[in-house]
Image (cartoon, rainbow over all chains, first blue to last red):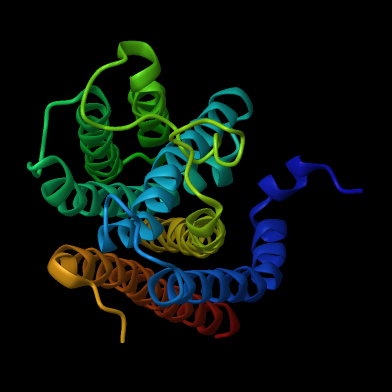
Length: 246
Length: 53
């Protein structure tokens, strides 16, 4: 079996990701479309929340993947720090816009869900606030990559920013455990079906897990695709620099 | 058709914005990938011609 570090070789990464991409994209499309149709058309309204419960199928998967995207960037940044593999730094760069869009989706869908249920679009609640800060970290991370000309220096500085931002990614997930206050409810997905009062019902859980799988595969597909673009872009810049020096 | 009752606007807007943002993300990624691939092919072709002449 090949070592995972072999994929740090750009040629090996391009070959493997090229073969994987159609399958990953197909699974993402299938789960996303199937899960959203299942959740929107074939699940009942909640007895307390009415039809707004259907927002769960876009809000929860996007929020979970927004945090996981940053944690993936953290792992890639640590690999860059320790082993100096360029592909890992480029994968972190490629993941940032995807995570940023997922965070934006979670913030928007949370606001439109919160208004009818809580009576407000926004509250400076620990989870919501840490999520907003995570969104700002995504923007800062992307801006920093664009602001620095030297790619290795950009990779170093963005990796440091990623380490700092990880605090807010973790706070976003565990804010209620740490502070035990605010409007946002606690974890209901992992407590489903285990007798906990507020655990989400299986009638909502299964379509939501299908959409979550779709979001996860979409993230993987986009990161692979965008990393391939970053590798090509890096090669393009190197060739242009060589031409100028010749 | 699903009856969303009084919550039709928040539910439909949540889905519409989600789908629009995901489509924009995918389209933007494809657009940039094609632009970079085309530019790289041009530079490699130019270098190929330079090497053969």
